Length: 175
Ligand code: IMP
Ligand code: MG
Image (cartoon, rainbow, N blue to C red; front, top):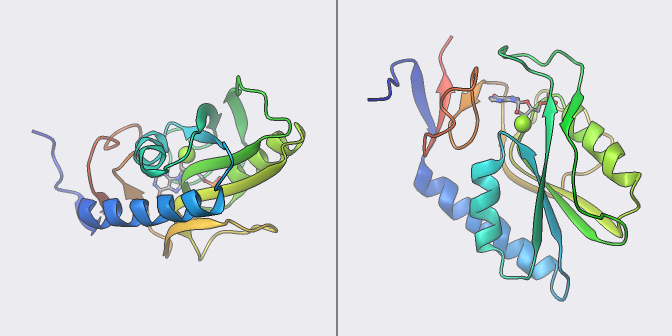
């Protein structure tokens, strides 16, 4: 049995499912006639990504990149590193970056610079969660699942020290 004593339910899996379908429908409408590449940010986005792409009714491609900045802590080290680069050709393609959560905005800014260098024809971002109280960005995140205040959350791909990613709902980690 997985221990959930220190967790408080935050967003139930049924609500997540509904919201993911809404975002997917919006993307389906916005990218009609196009064949976007979804770029997932490992590890956190893997579950959101898989639910999202299966709900978008378009031909699409997927790829993943991996960043490191948190280690086993709850606060960003402020130092983003690329641990795994993309394998696909981004030039003249429509790119949609898929994030689990945007906190400071450091990771997504790093990714934006990285992908922009490859001259895609368009670049947009989708994140399931967006910490409105901490994010500092000078560009727009087009698709946002939920705007939340500053709390540490786990589940549905999100971890604390690599734990809890497999939970179906999203929880607040107490303390
Ligand atoms: P940022 O660079 O500060 O925006 O942090 C983004 C990354 O930090 C996310 O992709 C997550 O992997 C991780 N992160 C930020 N906040 C949380 C949280 O509340 N729970 C789990 N991971 C988080
Ligand atoms: Mg992440």
